[in-house]
Image (cartoon, rainbow, N blue to C red; front, side):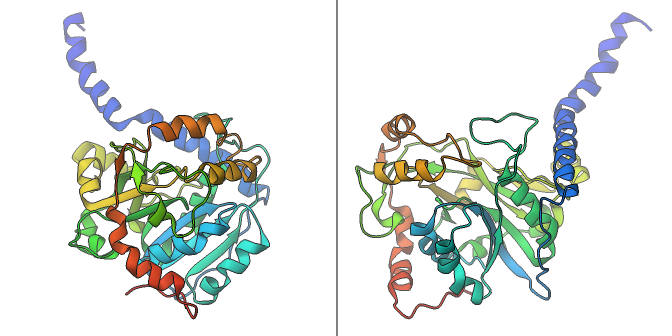
Length: 340
């Protein structure tokens, strides 16, 4: 074969290989093998099935030491049309169980004890060939509960997602405006909020007190995904879900079904990230997370560095939902229920 012909033969294959990101699929299989060994050792429990229950929109989250913020976060997303929460409890505190019990009794929360496992990575030990307890939690949710929801959103308990436009009053109305059969998911970039000058925790709600943020969006995303496209992997990424391999190949080569991301996603949805809050709250969180999958993430130096650039502009967009949330949150006879 003539040397001059080789580039004409090899270049198209190289372009396809780059587009498919074949290394990504190899890494997925390697991490699935690690997760499979964990399941094989019996270190992960099989939950009771949710028979005859189906939710249009659900959230999966893992939490630890979030007692002061649980009710606000749950009630806000109930206002946003979320119908169920799969909460993986990494802290295993009795106080968290008590706070969640009214939501469990109302059928709004599936509470899953999720202790640390030996050998998994934490914040200081991360790499492409390691798994965290968070990734296993998300994979566990998809594996055992995928038949119970149409859309699944992954969030942390310091993140609040809401419609970007006043045209929509909840996340459900945004999703129902889309052609669900042509969309695998939505990846929304977050906006980090700073301390807003608070040294100690102020009275009131998080979305009420912390109103100063960065002027630009973060590169990090959280996703909402359609259940029929989700992969059967034993783990899921901390920022977006994996999809069925043949669907990912189809999407990358043909652009169908689509994943809404970038500017298009943030025109639909907003994601406020209250990672810092006040200095006292941040340092208290660092003590709670001294061990486990978040170990090493929070410290005073990191707080000061992040807070310096996280109070650039005032942003009160989320507060259009504040009156409804306060009425719901402050009602002494409150009964947890979703907004239909």
